[in-house]
Image (cartoon, rainbow, N blue to C red; front, top):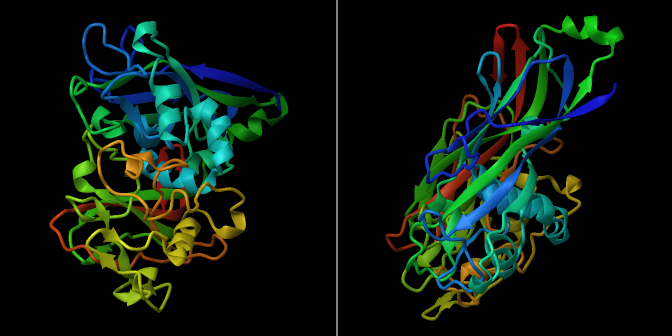
Length: 456
């Protein structure tokens, strides 16, 4: 089977080809039309150019390296920071095949746990504008040299889209009588959620925004040999399996938080959650995409710690029939008036978090380590060396997770019983913490001439 490479323009862009959330284009849509071919979803990439501006004048002013205050982006996410939701649709019926909300928050954990620092600095830097260092990200991706140079440089990217549908290994029969075409939607993130001031100052940069241009989708389509045309045209129905992500949002504001959901999922693989202060979301002063510890003291920015965690199924402990107690209970690891007296993250929580994203037996690279999973920072919006924005290797990478399946069988049946988690911590102040919950589960997609059906 010979292959050809398609380059597809978006369905919905303005005449000048420039797309930005601020100027009224929050959704990107690409359609791979029905045709006599076989699509390899792994080959799908979003290509284009990124520019970041510090104001909304006409024309806007680019960000420069000697700006003060300086606007930047999350350095572990790069171009993924502007992607708030990913939706994959069956083009003929417009039914949803996969929908990942809080896509950039999910990728914050996924990329950190499945990519080495060399990956992020190497090919991910070239393809997705990732630079896992705050200074490098600002100078090499966001900024355009010094003000005196007056440069206005567009930064090229060609990013794949990690998701179950894309990475399942299934090939898609694009013939009109079979699965047919595929539509991909990307909901863009608000400027205030993916951009932030390095020192928390918004003087003259309150209208900062990003802009995308020269956008295309590229993919590989295999031509169907004449000898196989009749057989593939007869595939009017079929099924494919992949692991999908269900995303939920809630908040906690107590030292004894209880989270419960009726999921309706029959084959839950794993679950993990990440945290950040709710006040950090959608504000240019803070990095709302960072995955940090909860905050114990809002004024001083000191970190909270979990003392006891239990995952539940129908109110009973599952899959572990015991509580996870952390190193906060070890003698000497107590709070002082100056802040936390210990900086080492709990190793059991770290391992469970990493395994909830990808099992250890499949883990061959990661950037999760002591440099980005520690308690040696404070939640302040300044550019200080010990502030959360300045942490090395992509920034803070904390989460709480659990794995239900040993070998990808998805034995966590929550179709009849509630999913729950109990979180005990030293949170005492009125300072709500945002919780992003991600559930990885096995999904079966069945298609017919009438449309698709999702069985989870």
